[in-house]
Image 1: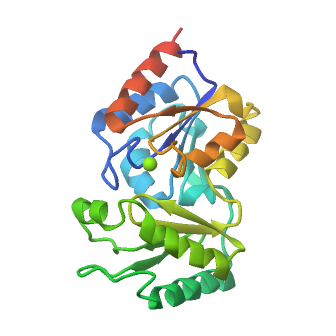
Image 2: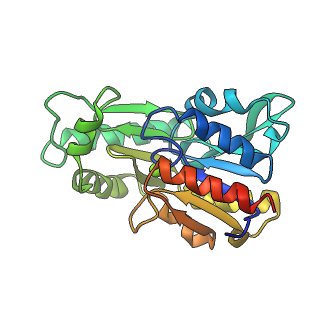
Amino acid sequence: MQCPRAVIFDLDDTLAESFQPPKHQMVTKLGLLLDRIPLAIMTAAGFTRIEDQFLSKLADSPYISRLYVFPNSTAECYVCESGKWHTAYSESLTKDERHAITVALQESLADTELFPAHPKHEPMIIDRDAQIAFATLGLDATLEEKQSWDPDQAKRKRLVAILEKKIPQFEILMGGMTTIDITRKNVNKAYGVRWLSTHLGIPANEMLYVGDALYEGGNDAVVMSTGIETRAVGGPDETERVIDELIVACSA
Ligand SMILES: [Mg+2]
């Protein structure tokens, strides 16, 4: 493997199991790679989770200022300056936009044939300013419940089709096993890759994107339109091996 000039990682099922904290050695290895090249994390998750699980442990790195954190489907980018994290940009939704999205979601849900109710879990709308996350099973469902709810994405595809008619002015993405994420139009991981490429002055094709969902229809596949090199992984264990390879390649 050749050393890329920057590496971007997806979070869920790439750096950590879905919604779980990363393993200790994963964060240690990310730190070692950060000593060598700029890194980024791109995820539909909110900033607080990444801050708790990664940033607190990487804070002492002398290279922390070249770690770029893109939460909310890259509707925002956070960077660290003088020990403080702040937004390098934010594609925030206005109050009216967030209201329009919430109403569209509620209307779509009222059609139970379109979106049948789960016997135990209620859907939940999570407003994170730059992104509205719609958790179809709320936040307390077990991994098994999530895996069996929409395994072929059929329920969410129907919901997305309806939402695309109601609110075509927004980006509507499927994330994880049970979530739909809504951001400003064209704000998705490809937007984040292009922003980072411009910001670092590194062509996308000299950077590497590592993710578990690079297959067609997967939530990482959109990055391919930027020309970035990609490496598909089956989960965090494989990602760890990729990081090991990168550390060797970037130490030469
Ligand atoms: Mg993923």
